[in-house]
Image (cartoon, rainbow, N blue to C red; front, side):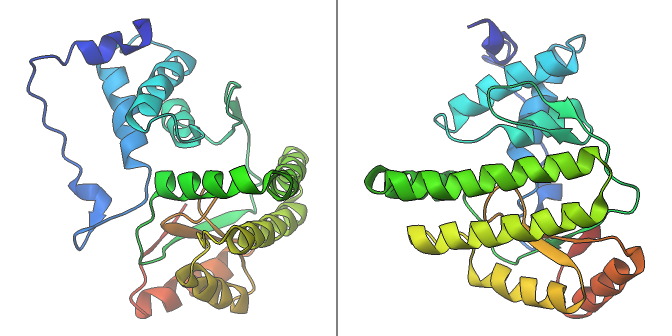
Length: 237
């Protein structure tokens, strides 16, 4: 396939990739490292490709690695190198975040397997198609409303939709029995909400990181200081 030409150039080649920055105390952090490395390889072998071309090629490669599982959002973000709105099957669309929307990434302390969670939810979906569609519709509609709020620069509405999406995720996690919204995220959400910030696991589901959101940057920085004193790893986005 033409989109795999760049990887075919690796045949019989020796290539070392240093991924040590994606680990903390021997635990792999959920930072989208496989997506970033895939995009980097495509850019290495096809430096003149446009961002959309890099995304298309890297996405196909990544799907092959993960047996077709995954939305491709992490690939799209790495390829475009800017904030985007993304839906599988469509081109990434750049979006500008409100100036007063601040975010803090918080390591949950537990690594997560995206492919494992997706496979488990899909197994539940086969026996519960109506319930699955109902939960996915709630998530999709809330995401659409959040995008609308971003486009109108309405930070408070963005925060409200993030909180709503978070609750929908938790319900899907519980009803499906997959429990991707694990105890680590539940406990972190309590801490974040006590600091008057919104919370959601990273990505579409229960990722390795959670994200705290606020329109008050100082509140977020104070939260970061508190979590660091409790030995939680954080960084401002």
